Length: 312
Image (cartoon, rainbow, N blue to C red; front, side):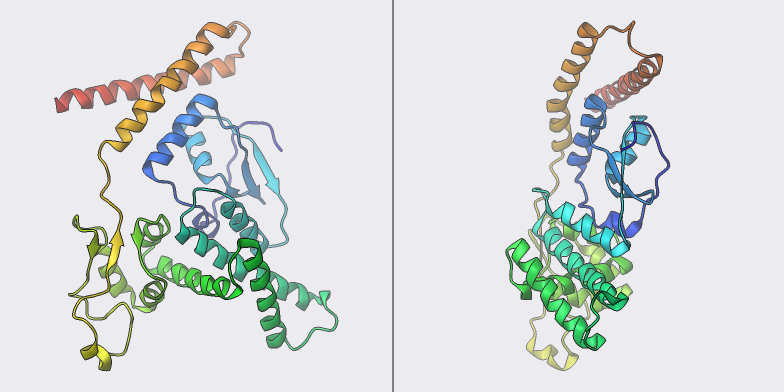
């Protein structure tokens, strides 16, 4: 592990999409913690590409907070994907949608790893490729099912879910984080059906998600049902589209309340630093970084007070 500093690291879109997206409140809290406590956890990389710590990397570089780097070694991309999925699945605060997606991605990646190793001669008595791949898939599904306390069939179903989500991500990337965050409840079958629609239809449906204050939103004006059944059955289908449930509307007080609870910890840290630190012994580099951060904080406080004053 390297000492703390700043590095130009690479960001891989596939790897970043495997990381659970933070809500605005969570991102603000992470930023506040980094300002007060510094970056305690290293940014984890593989060949200079981030595999964990994307948000910390962005915040630390923006606010000039030094961080350490931990470089891992993998045989290939699939191995890195497996590590990222397993690392994310070990977190407590992921949604059920994200959990299904990550298990599905891990399953597909491990299948590819096992097939690659057999093809490279790890199994000298390997059966024909198609049969070997099927057997490897079953073993992988069983093992991951045992690990995550679900059936092997559920693991394979989650793989179809993750494949559909990746297809959706290519068509409407802004929709995927909304689904994985749990803010919009869409069934497995509807996810698959959406992924099979053309880009124009998906974008049209996506633009209507979250509009209005109703707890359910229907797309009765759409040409096709989300079940994607043939038109000949349209007479048997209800006129309205299947409901997509949304979470309650965003609370306008949430960020302000979070900041109100966070600031006392900042004040306490500043007071402890002021009263307990020997500033004559602190390095010039550290004092300059602290000075710059305090000035930034002061500027933001003045700006926020000005905005609040305008509202009264």
